[in-house]
Length: 125
Image 1 (cartoon, one colour):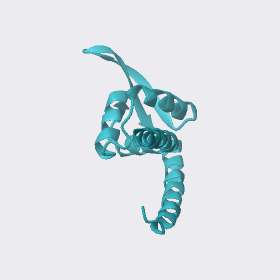
Image 2 (cartoon, rainbow, N blue to C red):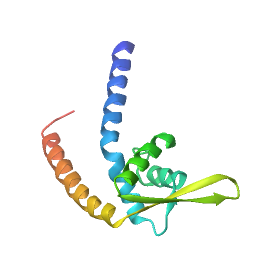
Image 3 (tube, rainbow, N blue to C red):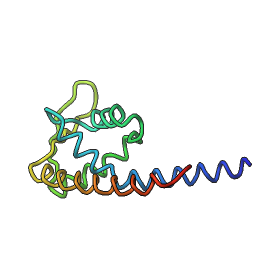
Image 4 (tube, rainbow, N blue to C red):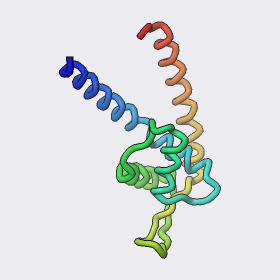
């Protein structure tokens, strides 16, 4: 039975990784849209950890490529500020285009979530 459990655990981790890959950009934009001021990577990671009850928590370093991709798409803007307690920090804020895209992504997420929830209601685990 331990082999079965480890196979299930492996499949769960793979599923969580694939699911996360599709939702991290949405969550990052949402965190930055709700922020009153620009945030740096660690602050964003802590926000995701706090509001996501661990479901969105992950390696902080994995957020930076997503942040860079969102910025290169014009959805975020960043600037660097010196830090008294270490290296300079890159602060991110959502752009107007980012807010527009976020609104569309939120509708797409809601439709997907509702569809999946409807299908799952018919399943008894």
